[in-house]
Image (cartoon, rainbow, N blue to C red; front, side):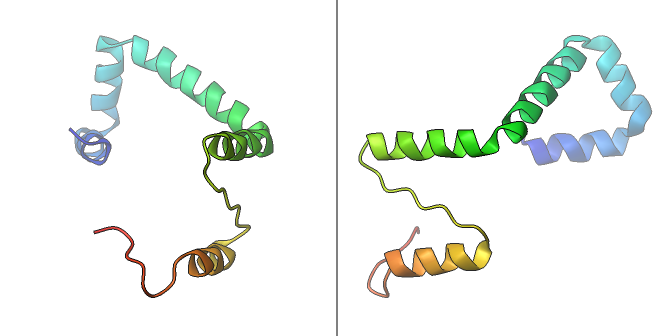
Length: 89
């Protein structure tokens, strides 16, 4: 089952249904809290994680590009991919 289907199902059963599921599976609350803590850790040090990812990509011979916004991302992609190249199928 996909995450979107799970979310859809949870909204169908409503909050009471969610509470029942959490009562039956208490580890889910703990997992959610650990996930939240990790998410906040990444957000607090996002620049460090971005730099770590760029270094990892370059270490294996890749080329990393960092865009500040969607427009810059499109410009970068346009410079990399010309009209003769096919992206995805």
